[in-house]
Image (cartoon, rainbow, N blue to C red):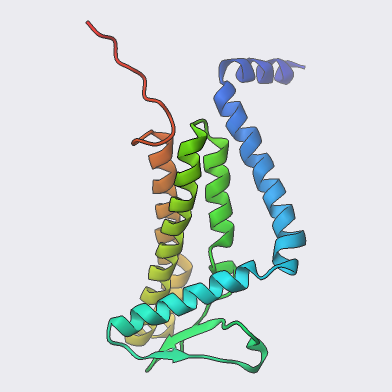
Length: 193
């Protein structure tokens, strides 16, 4: 019973933190169930995001002066899952790399955090666009690493460097919202002497 009393004390003393934890974990559970049982199997959300990543990556690579390689496989159907540049094997962009789950985690965090809904309404799409842009930069960088440094360097950077890179951007966006930086929380006013 002692822990129940401590929980009640915590809820009374830190209602915003408690609200954030309940909404954050609850939101993630709802998202995960909806994504795995409906969105992933019944929609083309991942396919459209992956296709966009590939098309934008090919465009940027071409602007940078490289020749993109369009990979089509018999089982691709309407959507492609590989992108590359001449001289390298190319990379596979699968559902685990398209960023959809990261978009959801970012949005759930912002929605769970205290703040004005109008700010959330523009901050969430802007943050998702930033995460998508970071993912495009990640794919382009991985292609360059593959071309100039080989498969081993590609694997290391895919598994470690760019995981830290993308999560750092998400953390910076969360932090920017949480501390205010013109978004979200109201800053306490300092007493006037």
